[in-house]
Amino acid sequence: MSEERRRAVLHAIVEGYVATHEPVGSKALAEQRELGVSSATIRNDMAILEEEGLIAQPYTSAGRIPTDKGYRSFVDQLAASALSDAHRRAIGTFLSDAVDLNDVVERSVRLLSQLTRQVAVVQYPSLRESSVRRIEIVRMGAEHALVVVVSADARVEQQSIALGEATSDDAFERAVREVNATAHGLSGARLEAALTLWAQAPDQVPWAGAVADVVVAATRGGTVERVVFAGASNLARAGSGLEATTIAPVLDALEEQVVLLRLLHEMAAEGDDVTVRIGAETHHEALSRTSIVAAAYGRDAASLVGALGPTRMDYPGTMAAVRAVARYLSKVVEL
Figure 1 (cartoon, one colour):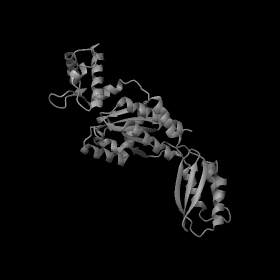
Figure 2 (cartoon, one colour):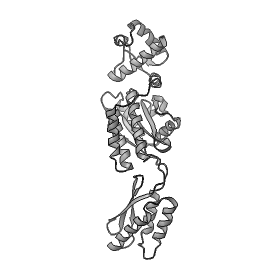
Figure 3 (spheres, rainbow, N blue to C red):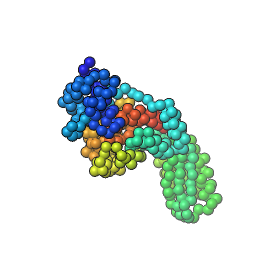
Figure 4 (tube, one colour):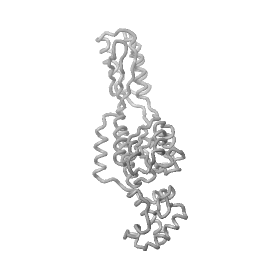
């Protein structure tokens, strides 16, 4: 009974501190009818929680705030919660309007940042080999052209090529028609073989080989080691709990991406529905005042989506939002 009550006191301190940004005292807790005990009993419980390293007193005569260990205990005991139906519908509608994979990722990271009021991060999904849907070749002056490849899984890749010599409009348009007729619906070795024959055909344009290389590369599978983030300004908003001297190293870590990618890979290996790293658990000094909540998505659950913010964050709400966005992302990228 006393253990359950102390757990309830810890939860109340975490929730109170997150909501008010102020240390929580025994008197304020005693006024919460849910606990149903006296201020003296709560003070005794708080003393034990402090001895266990779950809460701390930031300054003399202040109430208590959770430590990283206290947040960890709180998170480990949380039951999975869900977003409201309205939020889930909004996520589904917003992501379903995306026009390609890049748009899906950009929309997801912006949406998650708005839902959590934290820095949202999305690791690009691992890509399987895909077939060609459409190829566009756009002139860029007399000597260059832009090759745009749209694959069946909504990826859009583009690359500039050199034309080498003057190409008539008729020859240019014929090459565009032929490469689409040759490559449409093909992937892998069949695509490469078909494009090789096309590029080597008599009277072919001299830049056909360059187009073939771009198309084959654009449809290959593999893992893209790239992270997109949004909402960095949330770190500096009033009440975030992060000082200016703390924010700069966090932004540097986000920009570098190496630190973030390593952390995401470690979290993916844990295999949990939603993974949370708190403070020092990030194993990086620049992120020691932050927490990151992440969930795997996509094929083989190899990529992650998450939210990064101060350790004093709304863990239940953030975990629910991350879980929901990860599920919708999985549906979209696996189509």
